[in-house]
Length: 337
Image 1: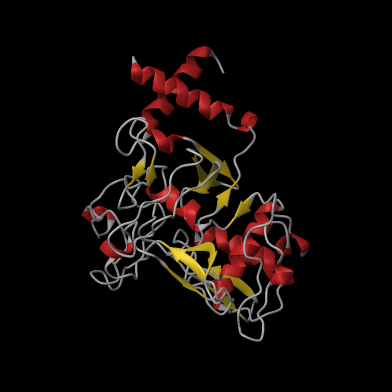
Image 2: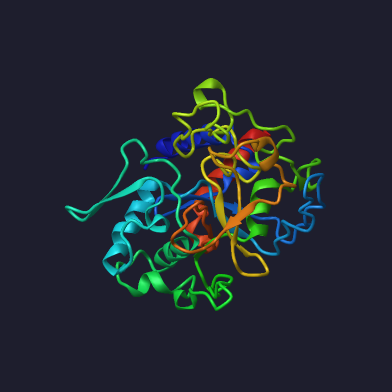
């Protein structure tokens, strides 16, 4: 490319970035999925709020990436089609199919419900773990690629008290995993410049603000699909990324709305895995979206599919991201002149 073309490309990229918060500019892609880098390692934990507190949550000692959006139904179908040759259970189990994938017994095939291709997928925690294994192993379509890497699925089971025996956290060296409560919370509410340059703090809501998000469809001026099942009983769902102007300080989309999201954390009795975030079906999102709301949880077993997945990941080696970092730096220099 000649220098004139290069300059034009940089101008175009700069224009696209100009409206994006500075923290949200570190974007990378893997398997076609956008990730945001969360830095400020060693940040202080959330001090607590007025509802259920959540004091002590959100401190993360390392840098990491987290998906800009939730896994879509189309992306989940790719996993289902790859995994089912090795799957011996019920082909219609909710934890595998979720709400938007159907199994046709006659041809023995899966398909997405028409119109739901870009909806946020939902699945069981255990299937979400297998999805992470598959990504970790480069989407190799062999049985072993689904059963180890990020999580050892041979640990999946329960004891005589019905507590699950699943591996509690991802394996060392995992490239992709289900976020921890702290990782999700930091990426959603923490801002290193919350109180001014280099003065960190936490926002109350997941859009970098302290006011409840406006419930409504995007074309109606809405900021979240959470609660849409009430005012819009026949159209409570929207595609992922339908509110591009509503982002967390780190650039996350659809933290409010879409689906609730699985987390790594478990209750002390090991009967459920935690979740954060609101869905279209959640009422009173003005409370559930708050940083001081404790979230919820569910059994990790495949008979249940109440939540979706926003993947956490390692940061690529420096050489793989230099082009974007250079362009972002040029843009910031241009704006500073």
